[in-house]
Length: 117
Ligand code: 5GP
Ligand code: ZN
Image (tube, rainbow, N blue to C red):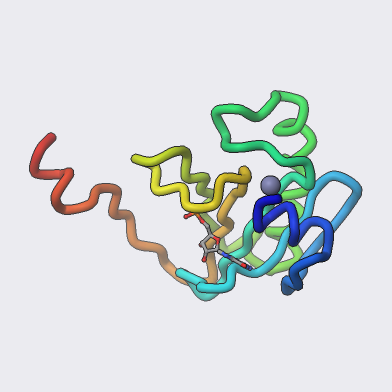
């Protein structure tokens, strides 16, 4: 079972922000912004490329609620999903990063790969 499935089942503890029957939101263990929440479906889905439209549709209002709870719905935030190797996905269970709490930098490319483009 993957690490986020274990978090979804409560077998590994997490600092939860919001949960319902289908989704869970919790603080990232290594935050990259003042607010850094991970939002996952409880069902194991490998990545964004594999997710159904139905799950994504249901996830929308859940993510919006997480933004409200963490107080970034008005100040702004970034929603990111890393997909596959080039996207930098390390945990292969679909998750969205909700980042906020300050002005965010915008830096897409690893320096090495940038040179080869
Ligand atoms: P990825 O690189 O796959 O897009 O993001 C994985 C994220 O999961 C990283 O930001 C990492 O800090 C976070 N992470 C990895 N293991 C754990 C964990 O056990 N608990 C929590 N809360 N976050 C984790
Ligand atoms: Zn999983």
